[in-house]
Image 1: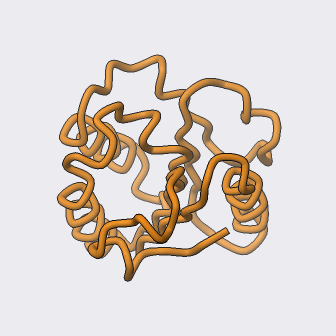
Image 2: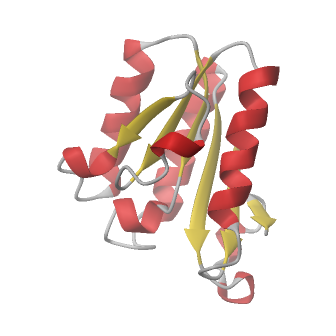
Length: 138
């Protein structure tokens, strides 16, 4: 399952996601992973969440990011949920390739029973049609 949290900058997407992560720690039995560009959110999350600063890795496109996520999953088959904060900051190509990336995440999520929550800064009214089934507005 993939959930895309959408909203304009400053709309509370990150706070919503942090609250979701900290609730999931109490309710989910598997490992949780939080991917973000930078370390600024590290101390807002429960200590049980694996925090990954994506700036420490050279991720230039969605294919590389997908491989990165596969590496995380292969390292821990107990992963149940991966949270990705501001994906269009992590992968600087923006929307280009995002639709295919979501298809790849859907396939691997179904195969290993992993949920994904992804935040993007955008106006829902301007979101591409392919995102509609994934969207949660904040």
